[in-house]
Length: 235
Ligand SMILES: [Zn+2]
Ligand SMILES: [Zn+2]
Figure 1: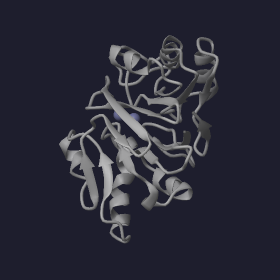
Figure 2 (figure 1 turned 90 degrees about the vertical axis):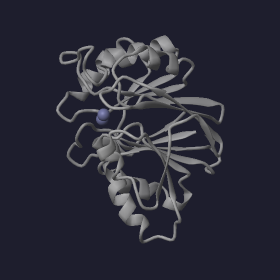
Figure 3 (figure 1 turned 45 degrees about the vertical axis):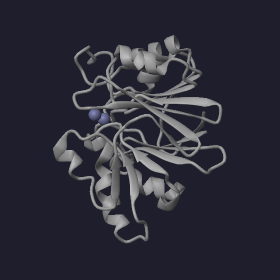
Figure 4 (figure 1 turned 120 degrees about the horizontal axis):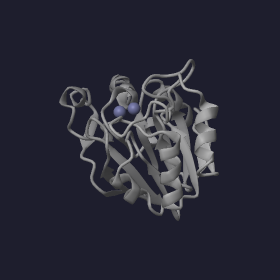
């Protein structure tokens, strides 16, 4: 399968950047899933795919840096001959969930088969209801951690993953067990202990030094790279 980074910032975009959004395509190109659609990602998605060929949008959680472009997607759908657009999302927080309406057809995050991909979920550690997402297909296993701090659930879920796309939203200096994100060392330990093939650090805060984040992670897990908008990664 192929992963395209539509945006990798959080909780706000960098200059010319975009928040969380990822396109996962099968090798045959017949199955396409979008994971999160934060600010600035819809325009980048449209450069890579038509809306018609997207099988589903899966939201890890309903924080705006992961879902704000869903609001303009619903405007866009009104102008297209598309009956409904499948969105997999949770019911909370209810004030954000209310923004998913119209042609956006919502389904709960439960294990399911979408085209050539098996999709699985596990609840992770974040202030609102948040799920890590696992995609299995094309003889590969991909895990997107969503937003989470370190927890037993994500450790178990990542076991056997070929590629882990991880929330590296904090530096080690400001990280604490009570915070909502991981730091580079935590992401790297997760990849090492899962025996993953590669680690991609995302949810990058524009105020933090990216080189420092990368070096810290690579000290623990060598095959680490930073997500970058426009980057395509083979899984
Ligand atoms: Zn976030
Ligand atoms: Zn969040």
